Amino acid sequence: MSRPLIGITAYFEAARWSDWVREAVLSPPSYAKAVDRAGGAPVVLPPLGLHAIEDYVQGLRGLVLAGGVELAASTYGGEEDERVPEAQAHRDRFELALARAAVRADVPILAIARGMHVLNVAQGGTLIPWLPEVLDSERHGERASERTGEPGAAHTIQVSVSSKLGKAVGDRIEVTAPHHQSVRRLGSGLLAVAWAEDQIVEGIELQGHRFGVGVQWHPERGDGRLFDAFIEAAR
Image (cartoon, rainbow, N blue to C red; front, side):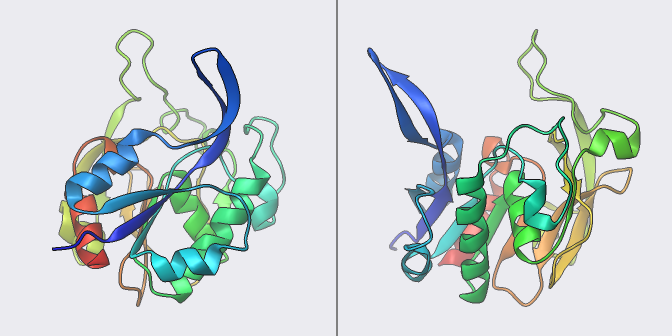
């Protein structure tokens, strides 16, 4: 059986190899490895511009909107917050356009962390720019322990059993998902399908779409069931 071609969004960063330091197209290998393990053929997509968007959508069988730095508040009509790291405007433009094109073409989408926010904003939704201020707590933003290297505190997510996400992972899943932003208003056609105990949205789905799922955590780092469901939809 042939492997479906799966695009993975990436970003430009300075990288070093040998004595060279140059701008490079970077993507954590965990995304490509997760796609490969699930039976897909991963392809990294550099955020060069909008001219190739339709070609990508026509050639790909699925799209992973990967994690990364937060979206600029201007993309959803919000006000910039100095506590939020500087946005990458070229990546915001590229990924929002790519997400909209993939939705129109009914290409399966798995949107992870920042990617979930991209999908929501692409559909006209908004974000909470600084979640700790809303909750008066850092519990969603706990970062990796310097001693153990663990990626933040684990917490349990409740998942709608009738959703594609629930059918893939069950009604409850324990995740580590440090984040300082979250969905505020859902975009057009999106439903919330997973929540933390404090009702912060941790999973969304695009209704009427072959597979349009966004999660706040990083399934590429562990449990492969969601990638299995995504690749199955991409076939």
